[in-house]
Amino acid sequence: MIDTYKKKIVAFYERHKRMPGYKELMDLTGFKSKNAVYKLINKLVEAGVLSKDAQGRISFTRGADEIPLLGLVEAGIPTLTEESELDTMNLNTFLVEDRESSYLLEVKGDSMIEEGIKEGDLVVAEKATTAKEGEIVIAEVDGGWTMKYYRKKNGKVYLEPANKNYKPIYPEYDLKIAAVVKGVIRKY
Image 1: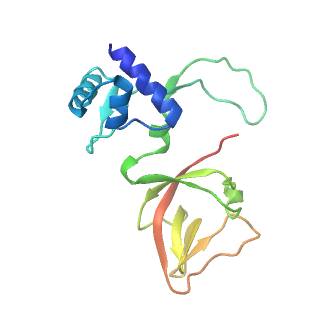
Image 2 (image 1 turned 90 degrees about the vertical axis):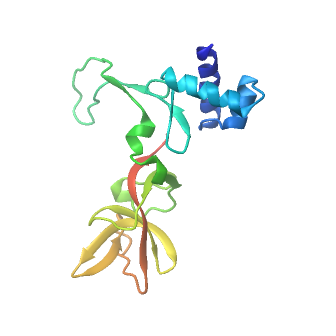
Image 3 (image 1 turned 135 degrees about the vertical axis):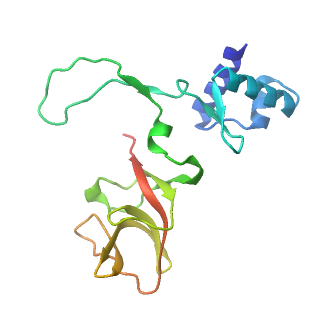
């Protein structure tokens, strides 16, 4: 019976790209009460299918939303290698260190192109109010929002693009860091 519910939850996840809420789980399972769904979730947690965080949000445990990690691919001179499954990888876990303070942003513009961040890419951002020299930040500067390298020179803070066609941004009034970029996602 647990496999049936797991399949329904996986199908929902694949269709909506998120986990179902209690009401949606009631619809998926045919249960008439949230208490029945709560008990089902606890059984799925005990069975190792799901896990719950401190806020009660559910996610898959290892396996359900992982893909195989097969090895390395040469981006230089071709070499002979054999395909062998080394492990599996959960992309959420790989890209998101702190789920509670992370979010995605779609990139607009080309000021970070030399860092390999193109328009249309998604960046994984983690909320922060400070940054280290050289980190890519999401910042509000003089009332406008941007993504650039965080830099300091001679005691002055500024934002540096990764495109030689753009100039560094020195705040006239205010610079507030909102997040640090932790990853980039591109779909072909």
